[in-house]
Amino acid sequence: LREDDTQNRMKESILLFDEICNSPWFKDTTFMLFLNKTDLFREKIPRVPLTVCFPDYSGENNYEQGTSFIKQQFLDTRNFNQKIYHHYTCAISTENVKFVFGAVKDTLLDGTLDTFLL
Image (cartoon, rainbow, N blue to C red):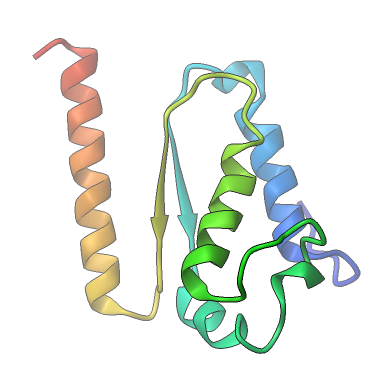
């Protein structure tokens, strides 16, 4: 996917996620969705309505409702019944990155144990 400055990056990301999730090659794959730059989103959402990107958005312009709506846009793309774990991340926050990668490690370990019925 080549970056195109004329396209909305959020919509491009959702389309790419849709293509990958709904590929027959990945129909039984567990996905991890990282919604990054939460710090920038938290700053921007009070100033720029989410309807700029999503005209059908009817929630409030706040962090909680906005992130929930965006997460759901990604989850609604799947046609198969894959597990999708999501994490809100701020890559410049060391504590957040440690927490998220700890959660990812636990998720991967649980999945591996389930696979081998341990």
